[in-house]
Image (cartoon, rainbow, N blue to C red):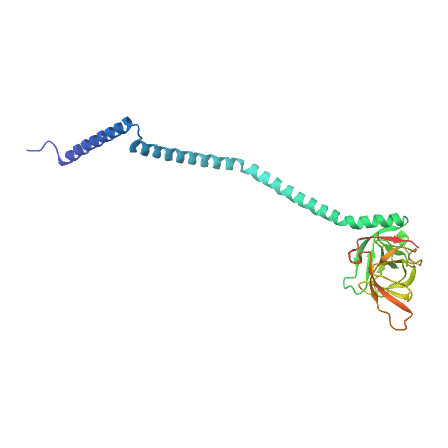
Length: 272
């Protein structure tokens, strides 16, 4: 005789019955928590799972939308990036030009002061110097075509620079006052004591000053009337007095040039 229910059918029946019983227990548990006004564990689990599912769906949607927007706007972003790079490069160029303009202001101001004193002076730019510093000579961009001549004086608004020693058609060479071969008629302004200003490579030495001169550190030294300058152009100030030897008939002093001879860019040539 064949049984009506098989073993497999029994297991299905038990599973269905178990599921019904579990569902009934969960329903009773949910009903009990609802009556007491508390959130049941089932509600907490369902709510949490739902929230995480919603967050995941939102994240996936956002990433997908952002990716699509990035692809769509990529050409425009590349164009904008190129414009920004060009703008930055332009601003950097303008900044460099502005810094260069500001760096030239002191030299231009000194030149303007010199032109007030010497209206007939010829402005010039320094275009060369001795790289080995063996000779304290600079080259300027004015020459015979500008009516320059040897022994013309050269100055800035701060003071004496030197004199023209060589003239070419388009340029000239200027011997600075601190060159050892430079000689310039000078006067200590206070007391009008005569002297000869001789270069010492770094400064200027006043020689052959009368032993009667009462010199002091800080005294102004100016040019005397001569081949290159009119009287009264500032050479510099005395920074040291050299002791006189016994029986000497003159004395010497060290002068710091008023013009910045190491940073010349613009000068004024004074015609004889």
